[in-house]
Length: 405
Image (cartoon, helix red, strand yellow):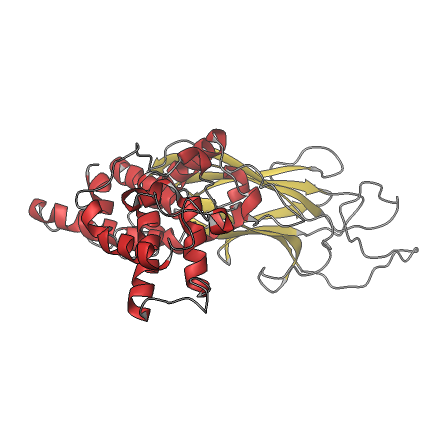
């Protein structure tokens, strides 16, 4: 399982657009270069050197003494020639021209020689790697592994250019940022296959501009206020949920607070008078409610909301506006509904490797029935992942470093 996590981490890094430049030393002309350049040399001597020679140097250019076996060593000069040939302006209209097939063959041959030499000596220092930003990275992980992640918790913030964070010029890659992407990829890989043992902690704050008196979209009908978040549980195990409760002012007795997982009630806290029956501190009812329950691995929606058990209009002498945010300056002698400040999730405690999850189904597309089928299944799994990650059919060379694990 750990090896699978390492392999997936490598694939995730590749899918994030973190490419590699190939460095090569200077190479001499390939065998047969002189023979291959014989016909282009004859065409240049017949149709071009008559003007572009050492004596006349038309346009300050002489092609008489240039060695066509080393075209790629002088790309700036020969690219000017190619541009003229592509535009069809050389030789001039009033000068004899070669047949069209030979004309195009010369142009294509020069381009191929320039490209061949350039491909063999890429300068890694001059290559700018265009990486994905955090939003694109999270989308890639979701499409590749069916895993919802919080990229802001894994990667530093993106630089912006002219107000946009997806401009290539600002998405550069430093050694420190590459290390952050590598660490994030390994964490994502462990979550994907359930190889996770260390407890984590995530705290979600209730939106300050959301009314705690009305139904929150996405939570079950019949609930009021609260908050709804999406959390990735890395492994099967017990998780501790802590909910900060604000019992500001006096409120109607009988309130009930529900912890909701994937639309189902996981736990219910009951108010008794001005305090709570579980985990409350202080006479005013403020405190933190805590409960530990088992949860299966995977991306799940978590909600904390109050049951809407009372719809009576306010009987306060002063008719106040609905509370739209979590302000702390409440007015005495007014009734306020209790509110939620934050939701904290800690775990897993006593983690167990999940046998089934959406990400596992996405990754383990083949399960060997015997030891003899392990290599076949490994290639099947890696071929499927690399095809989606690299956005092209994988080659045998792509699978070699992954199969070594």
